[in-house]
Image 1 (cartoon, protein in one colour):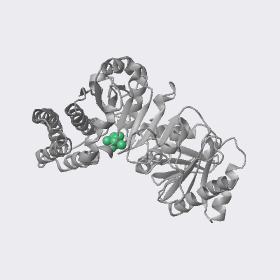
Image 2: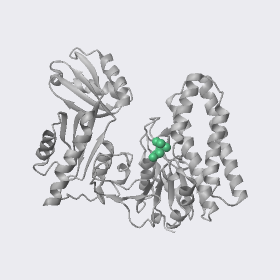
Image 3: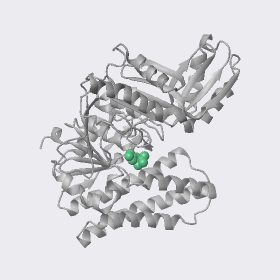
Image 4: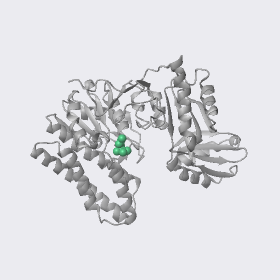
Length: 464
Ligand code: ASP
Ligand code: MG
């Protein structure tokens, strides 16, 4: 068959969370022709691996390693093995899992002796979660009569840079290798979430990174689409926990989806869209378990469309903190912003946004990065800087839609809705992205911010 017909499917951890769900996977895969199936770890496994490896690093004890590893084996055998009828196949799965488990055990014992968990080791440990689930799923598929086998990132040569926990895929280097490894009349099951650096080391693609690996693979094989199965109903106009009359969003442009992920909608890894822009490969989001899979809840594609309401979704995040670098005139000292940003970058931290004024530079970061970022800036000991402070209890609210920057009146409508609700806006960024505007409020105000803005845009769209 022609390789270009291979679709890439991504199954999230929530899909692989029960025996019933796993048993439904062969039926889903049969709807495609020799697809590539990229999997996350089973639900909860990455978190368990993380907690355990950090714990034994601190305890410097190998007590419990054997038990932990056996427990992981049992979970996978129970969930996946339970859906495999043939005894010999179950035994093969067990054998192959045992092999992986013994490698993990050695690694964990190494951590206990070392008494620390370097990022490179953490990456190797966490990648096992996806390898276990890929092994399990490939045997479930084979057991159901679908020619299938696991193909790992090491085997394929899914190549990344050297960043241990937040790597970027090198698409140019990976393309031919991945294409070759995945061609043929079989269903490849690929463990997502990690790649291999040029030096041959396992690198993680960031939290929730299986979406990003699936996109990179779709790009490499020029798939007709990337079909993502998740336990969500696709993108919505707001979080249904805050807003009663949310609307589904059937279509989003790549950049709208990217901004929504960046600012808190946890549906996709924010880098999922990146490898797909060039070839215009659409992402189709399907709820799982899904009925017949024929109607995706949201399609993300190249075409941008300005809706009547302009705004398509209002999202928020509680994961941001602000590092405020104060000093009279910091905004006017040439090169100061560069030094500040460089120091944070050197500490391996990502600045999500910067808003500056003459007397303050405000860095928006993920909350877990704020302390380290503040320390990095303080260590610079800059003359112009009087204080470096962290503001933690903030909420970032973002409004996303094609046309936001170009249509007049959007900002006015947004901020008058907030003013009417009596919300104090602490910081605003409008215009940085053509499709997103965002602002910072006290965390306690972010629910009311979302509901007020949603009402302002969506009630009016109905009325007109
Ligand atoms: N298992 C990894 C995580 O939990 C990757 C993924 O699920 O996409 O972050
Ligand atoms: Mg995930």
